[in-house]
Length: 300
Image 1 (cartoon, rainbow, N blue to C red):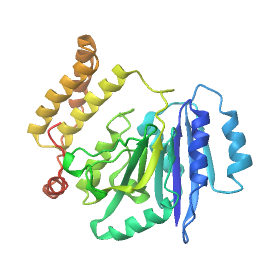
Image 2: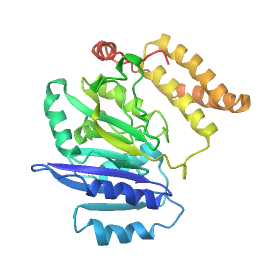
Image 3: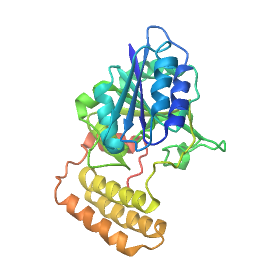
Image 4: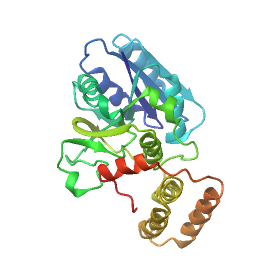
């Protein structure tokens, strides 16, 4: 069994090396074999140190290393799709380049989780994210669930997750027009619509150092979130939830952007253009029952 650790990197060479080091520290388990895939996603800064590090320090420990240098920045979605195609593992552990795996027996736990939840047709494991100040930030949208150690969920965070490789073969890739933001929701909806489940667990942890280098401005980020989340509600959810998303996420963008109304209307026009190019494919009745069972947040 091969588990591929997939790291997308953009202008963060040194923290990417730290992320790789955290993978090297993980305890081996049974017949599971490590593979590391690093995608240099169109970085504009030199990456000479990482290539030297891979050749001198990584390959002697993990022979299966695939370093890809793309001249083009394909964004988060496109980059993950490219890295997926390069990975040979049965399971893909996606890790942000400014993150580190903290749970040393992570591979053993991953094997156990997929076995324990096999009757739930588990396809994705989302894991706990610890920040430098010791606090946690997780894709948990209900206060009633925040203290639970583990539960089936309807969303995960792409920079801290394990995905069965055959999920992509079943439901398709990340949406390429989602350069960044809410792409996990899109993959989650398709996963649920294909009668597969998503797990969130605190048994596994990563440290997210939130390095701002290479990130987009807040206004651009908020615009992508507003457009992408509302578009997904239009495609996958009952119509009433599209209108509630449009209202709430419009307010979110306006407030977060500090009332940059010109930017809001530019994003709104782009959203309308995108809506006119897609077809609605609402989640099935069975999928909506799953969403209800896991207490999914649907209004916004």
